[in-house]
Each structure stands twice: as C-alpha cells, then as structure tokens.
Image (cartoon, rainbow, N blue to C red; front, side, top):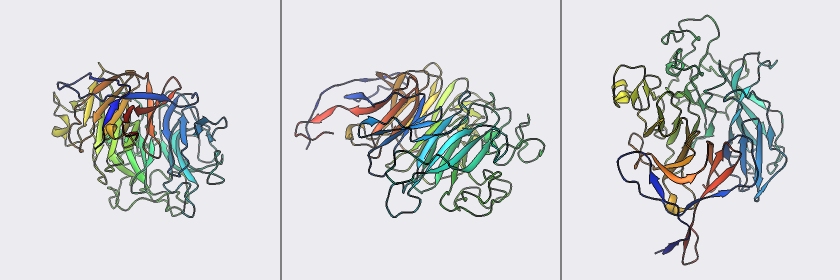
Length: 437
C-alpha cells in the first residue's frame, strides 16, 4: 500500500453546477522549453524518441527533443492564415519510427491551402497532406508532400482542423460548418454535395454553383490502402487521381447512394479539437457553440453515423428546432453533450484529453479549456451518453487563452496557449517509499 504526502497543492473549485466538486490536489504546470507562435496542438509519435512536436498556426512545426527546443523547424508549410485558418493539425502514422513496418516514415497535416495552387485549381480549401521523413530518426521532414484530401470551403473560420489516427488505424478528421453564422446553408446536416444556397434541405438537389460537402463533420478514411480509382462517393478526392485513400468498409454511409462516404459523424458547428481516450477508445469532441453554449460530446468507440445536433440544438438547448429548455437532443434524436457551459463562463471551447498518463491521481480526469476564460477546467470522465461528473469546474490555475492540448508517448498532457507558451500538466504527489506518482 502506497503512502503519499502532498508537496505542492492547488485546489480545484467549482465554477458551475449544483454539486460540490472534489478537489484534485497537487496540480501544477511545468513550462516546456521554447517560445511558439500561436501553438494549436502538441503531438508525439509512438517511436520511443520522447520528442514532442508543436504545431504553429502560421505554418511551422517545432520539435522539443531531450528537453531542448530545436531551432530548425520539423516542417514549414505554406498556408492561408486569415481568421482561424492556418496549419491546424498533425497526426503521425501509428507505425511512425518503427523499423520494418509499413508507412513508418509518414505523417499527416491538416492546413488551409492557399488559393491559386496550379495543381488542383484556385478554389481555397481545407486539405490533408502526407509528408515523410528522410530517416526514421530525422528531426527535419521532407518539405514536399502529397495532397490526400480536399474539403471545399467558403470562409476563413470554422475549419475544425484536428486530425488523429484512431485505435482502428484509420485517420479521423474534423471539419467546421463553413463559417457563416446561424447555419444558413445547413452543411452540417447534409451527407452529400450542396451549394451555398439558403435552402438547408437542398442536399444534392441543386447542382448550380460550387458544391460544398463534408463540412460540420468528423471524417474517417483509410490512408494505407490507396492508389485506386476515386468513386463518386469519395467526395474528398476532388481533383486527386488516383485516390490517396480509400473508404473503410465499416463507415456508416458505405453502400448508400448520394452520400459522401468519408463521413463518420455529422451535425457539428466547429469541432475544433477532439481526442481519443486511451483507456476505452471513446472519441471526445469539443464543439464550439454560437450564441450561448459550448459543448463536449462523446462518441462510443467504433460507433459511427451519429448526428450531433447542430444547428437544431446548441448544446442541450434549442437553436433551429422549436422548443425550450434542455431537451433538444432527446426531442430531435441527436447526441446530447456530456458537458456544456454558457457564455457567462467562456466563449469558445478548446477540447482536451482524458488523462491516462503516469500520474495515477489524475487518471480519468478530462482536462479542457476555452479560448476566452483563461482557466483550466476538468471533469471526471464517464461513459458516452452520461453527464461527466462533477460537470464544469475550474482550477485556480490561470493559463490564459488556450488553443489546444496534447499528450506525449507515455500520456503526459500539455497545454498550448495563445501567448506562445506550452506547458505540461503535472501532479506533485511524491510517495514516501521513493516512488514518484
């Protein structure tokens, strides 16, 4: 039986909800070396190197190795940077750095592609590109990449932009609803191509103008099986042939006509940051609200096809759908958030991670934040479809505007802040028998 003593304690206090929050003592933040320009994500390959990679919105990825911030960027990408655009996501292939395994030199980025690209036309869009490293231990990647998937877009905001390989080996991608307020086009509900008209129900029925698709979604693709013909239902392989990915056979809309088969989940406004829970593979999504409510939703592992409610609902509340109160998800048959908070507490949720790292005292704690609130929030993670106890809480840790989170290979968790800092969440418990928690 371990006996422990508190070395440095910081108490977490309830900021919303009617039940008393249980404090997590001994929580503190540790600065990561270096200064960064608008860091939006912290990622790490499972290659045994101990490196962490910090994604900067302006187009660079920086490396911290053996406690040192390397001067030379890992990758520099040409991006548009207006509003919320830029280099927004990074995902290392699960085999990255592992000798003898296929695709072990590959990683993927999500970015807003500059207009005027002569290869694929001049329409601005969101894009996924595959890059490689010259050697498995290289700290500088090959500059040239291959465009894998394109999502036509019409505004500089609501890009989503997070990407992760799931436990099934497929690449998951978040996309926002296109940007205009009040969801005038209904992209998030649409499973097929749609113009930017004022009829939310014109999915596939109005062929005039630019056709937008896959906005307001979580997408899932198989990037390992590529090189085949791009079918009509592969909406993201627009102008890319042969195809640089395939559709997983278990995707929910495979086998139906007039659907973009990359779509895994739909009904999101701007799923800016999402993550997988290492303990149970659940998908945890922070979806940015509009006027009043921010939300965290959870999708059970391996279950696709769900509608997460925007714009009929904003959080648990009615938006487009008729009604009042908090029964919108139940009334519309959509997925209810496990957490929501009003704009009296923040303005733009930054989804985080369920902590599964080396500190057992933090295990099962979901840390997340907000681009406006300036504090670190937590909840106790539960099952999908249940409220995450004890709801919304904040810590006495003022972290400033938060753009993203991340975890390293062993599960330590990091915060990427608007002021250019990256900090590690640590628990200051030390066991008397000499073992650190």
